[in-house]
Image 1 (cartoon, one colour):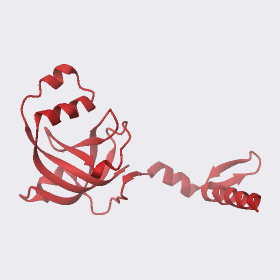
Image 2 (cartoon, helix red, strand yellow):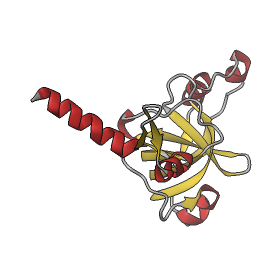
Image 3 (cartoon, rainbow, N blue to C red):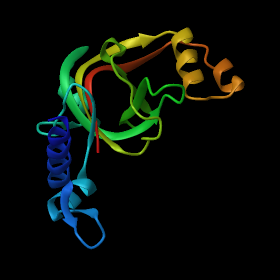
Image 4 (tube, rainbow, N blue to C red):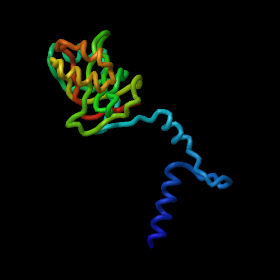
Amino acid sequence: MRFLLVAACSLSCTLAVGQVDKSSKTAKPSTHTALLATTQAHTYGTPVTPAGAVPVQQLKTVLAGRDSARVKLVGPIADVCKAEGCWLTMQPAPGQMMRVRFKDHAFLVPKDISGKTAVIEGIVVHETVSVAQQRHYAEDAGKSKQEIAAITTPVEQYNFIADGVRVQ
């Protein structure tokens, strides 16, 4: 009985991936599977779809004078925490960074996704970031001791608490 179950699972997995090439005994991906591989996105945290996402450069317009809002944004990833992948940054305007952290520290993202496009969903807040917190983030980003020591004043910035992140 156990053998039949394993054989059935193996067969269904082969069919799900593609058709078997009998001459080489390897699985060939179907055209549909190959297309998905080129456009595949990875989601971290709760599932996020691109539908309804607003470009991150329109953040100020979306907020319309409010200090916080629940939003879905899309844009390029500027930087990622080099220590663990526990945050990423996006640029809503030239010279301005928005830090994206993950709700309840429930998930991490890969450390090598800078430059890729992300869809993020959650709450954005305009707040003051302390010198100590900025220095902590600079350490996580792998900044030099001189760069870290140069951080001497709190900054006003947007911070985002993401329920989920979709990296395309």
